[in-house]
Length: 293
Image: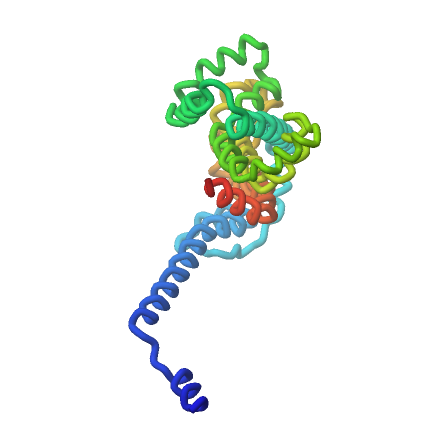
């Protein structure tokens, strides 16, 4: 009897619901793979084309692999423009903006999540509503404030406005609300202050959310173009996106140095790609945990 049941279970035909579920799973993963390939193809073409000659890049029909590998395009980047200076500026501004955003957003989020004060929820909703304001509406007022402070062509002028990340406050507040209040109550009983609880208990437990906000802020600062264009009027203070945009619009530069432009573009996005590859699991986990409550 047991052998008959095993045989029947082994050769049982799948039901219509099981077939539909398997078909849906196959289609879902096929669409994900197709989307991933479609997203990666332009990036792959850019990397391969950065080793091509200008004539090879403009060939029709298009050839993926270069007929002649030209690694000199990467050396030419540093000859045509002060690329190392642009890189240093982007790193300094990105680090300052990220560290400042993590400090400001985490303190504000902890206050909105744990400290009870009059008008807390109304104030949080008003702050959250500012996400709906287009960025170009505040561009001129922000510029006037920076000019009055004397921060034009300075790192603080480039970094400070990006430290206030409303979405970062929202994500961290949602994450802090998932932390059991009993942990903080026990710390209060042991004599810990609110600042000690924030620094020694809450922040270490919020590493996934902090990494998520930090990565979002770093990517936004690294890719920013309009704000550095307004603030940095000297070439020595240009960041990578601004430097690439200015040099790409020079007369005849793109026409004659397309390979070098692609090489510079690849070098400019390489740090963000590498950082995201190593931190993507924390990024996804932080986004997931921030929406639990």
